Length: 275
Image (cartoon, rainbow, N blue to C red; front, side):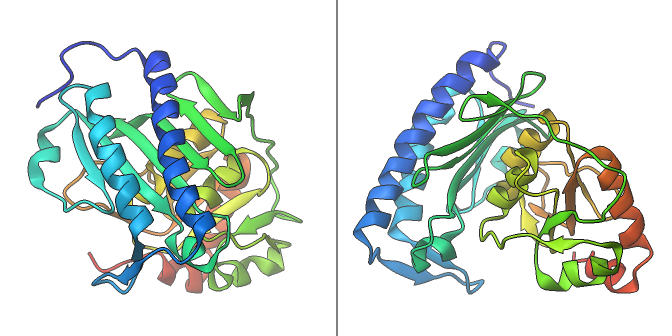
């Protein structure tokens, strides 16, 4: 398995990563402010814009040299099996929340993680319009614009603000769950659990590595958990990039949510995607 030639200094890497992602975000923000960015519809019926592609090109030029020998996985780059033989892989969503970008809603983010042996070790989720940056280093904690994050836990769902689709939240309402504000971008939704804006977040099946890798690390370093509906941790840089339905919350609340999901046929049925 190919790897970087020398051990990675994560703190130094995180600083350089923040500089690159901030510059990439500025590219997208300029096009967002201008409005009317050229857009297309991809084969899966999802939108892509000239901003997605411009940010992807910028990051593809600047990130791999930060970890020599690293592979590349991005939503906007054709995937190849080369990454599977790499110990370190950049996992990138140039713009997570492209629909928000197209609709003129400033809830989209640039999401980047470096994965080592299937686990994220550095991650950043950056909203350039609102100047909000969530970041984390494996074993080094998570921050929001430099402020250290730590989740608050509870062994109850009563009054819990949960982000996600109505179809996932509705079965939990009898447990006292409240529907949190809708957030277009999954990475952005997940990090709202890390910073306390949401108490938990749910995601339908078929999220990709690039949607969740950076947010996963930020959640863990803030003291929260991200798993599928069966309690299994996501693993990255596999042959498939897709994941089942997901739940993010502080540990005790996460356990209560998993139990509620397991006892609800609607949610149990919703956890699968066609493999």
